[in-house]
Image 1 (cartoon, one colour):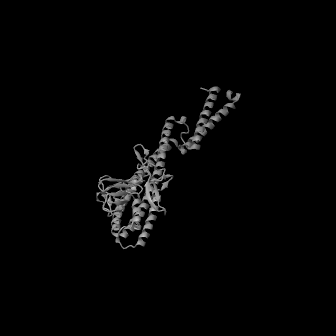
Image 2 (cartoon, rainbow, N blue to C red):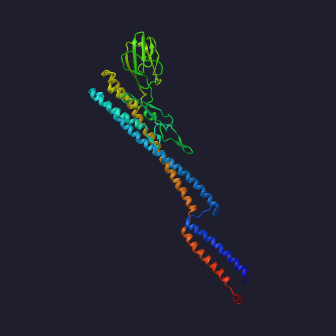
Image 3 (cartoon, helix red, strand yellow):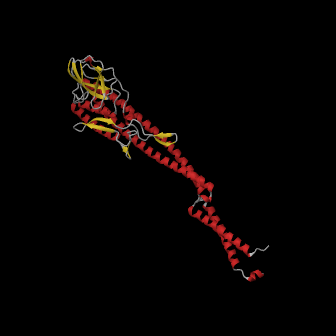
Amino acid sequence: MPYSLDAIYKNSRWAIGQNSSILAALQQKAATGQEVNRISDDPAASNQILAFITDSRTKEQTLKMLDEIVSTLDLSSSVIQSITGEFGRARASLTSTMSGTLNTELRQTLAADLDNILEEMVLLANTQRMGQSLFAGANSEQLPYTVERDDQGHIMRVDYQGSLEERKVQITDGLETSAVLAGPALFSSEQREEPVFYGQTGVATGTGTSSIRGDVQLTITGSAGNWQLSIDGGANVVAVNGTETNVAVVHSETGEVLFVDATGIQQAGDEPVRVPGTYDMFNALINARDLLKNEQNYSESQLQSMFADTIHSMDKINQRLVQAFPVVGGRLQVLTNFKESIGDMKLATDEDISRLQDTDITQVAIDLARYEMLYQMSLNVAARMFSMSLLDFMR
């Protein structure tokens, strides 16, 4: 049945429009390389793609966080290694004094060397990365260790002002960790023992639990029945008559307390007191340096006894330093493995996005050629329709 001119016109217009739209879509796919350029192209695929993109971005943020934490822990591990090396060198220097053959000049030289090591270790313990202190715990915005110096600039005391708690960061559901560590957990020995008295005054430990740490000097002045006790150079003095079994001697600056039994006091003098198990690497070095200087004029037998106990304390601290490596290394291993897993999952997600979104360029080229030909054929039909004459209808 012959077609009317109107039918031919409508079919031609529809074919031209249809082929033109398809060509435009194919050209856009060829230009962008994407199968889906707008939600209307494929709503179902678009929803999947958006979900995958969101998941990929979440994993990307997790990877960035893991990179930051791993880098910080790597630096912490290097710093701890340097601290361990310096502390081991200090211990070796002090061990050489146990032979008893070193003269005063050599001991002064070793004391100066320990001073330098002490300065270096304070700097290492206060290491920061991107404004965050590595060993300040949750208070990572501030330096963890502060120092008090004497008139000559020598370090006399190192105090920790960081937090004893770590700042936990949630990496993902069910996994949180901390890139910054608490210094006392790494650099201190926390196994308090009874105070040890090295002098000849006759004073002994009381029944109370003392809070002093490391080494203090107990100064006893006066005479029988009227003794004065002080652990801060006389700033705070406690008077006793010699019958007290548990006297609290308080340091005026730190508030630390030493409980003593005054019943055995026989004479006035300076009494070196040590609390084993309360050392950190700083007060151990300070004590070792001061023993080498021996400004209190201890006897050689006293020095040798105190040197031996100091080395024993340094051994315990060194054990804590060695134990820090598995702590940091364990976290690094867990986070590195987790980072690899997240990276693999992100790669799989990105492949899903590519599978849904990326176009097949070869197929697009074939479709372009086919629809270009159909488009040209539609144009030819339309052109021929408009060029028809009366003679064409008469045939």
